[in-house]
Image (cartoon, rainbow, N blue to C red; front, side, top):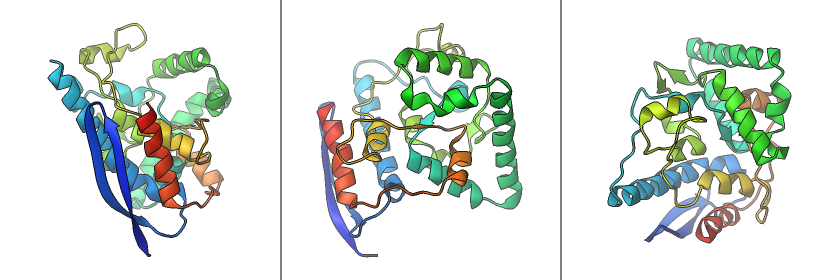
Amino acid sequence: METSTFTVEFTAFDERIKADIPIPADPVRSIELLPVLQQFTDSVVDISIKNIVQNGKSVSCKQGCAACCRQLVRVTESEAYLLYELIETMPKKRRNAIWERFDEAIEILEELELIMPLEDINDMTSEENRELDEKYFNLKIPCPFLEKETCSIYHNRPLACREYLVTSPAENCSNPFDNVIERVPIAGSIAVAAAQMEESVNSTYVRQVPLILAPVLAEESPDESEVRLASDMLSSVFSRLDSN
């Protein structure tokens, strides 16, 4: 595939990030840009952590502390397809185990009549979303990719997961709706910008998918996202970061 060079340049706190990265020259679907977005999310998070350290704070998240893996995580539509493809490329035994966890979780959600609300999160008010978040968290459903309290797809984890870090005591996360949770301020959310990008280059609408439904929805509906120039989509993402 023929490639071109895209220059990324935006400000994260007081640090200017600039890099030249190879991208497909021909139009592509947004799923093909996820590796680039994952890499730059990690870069922004690193800078954000450096910022809080300079202000005398530190990240309290640690391996085995997986309360956040029981939250209602929202992913972009392209990430839903990526998660589905990831599962389908796993060895049969592990693939079946992952699908079984999704099936068990969805069965619980169906019994509690929460499937429709989860599918409608993009049309809910902030208050309605918060109520749904709390109701979901209280079910204590672990992410199907969580194994031994550790993310089993860490290098492919969603953008939203990469951006979620806290400085408050780790034990507070066991009840984030009653306890004080201090998140690490992120210098622009690539997860949100990417969701906006998938609507159209100039869209301000954020369409996201609950992770717990993402692979199933991806399996049921083939990826029919618009094919666009990678440079246009990335320009949309990073211009939004600079405007924050």
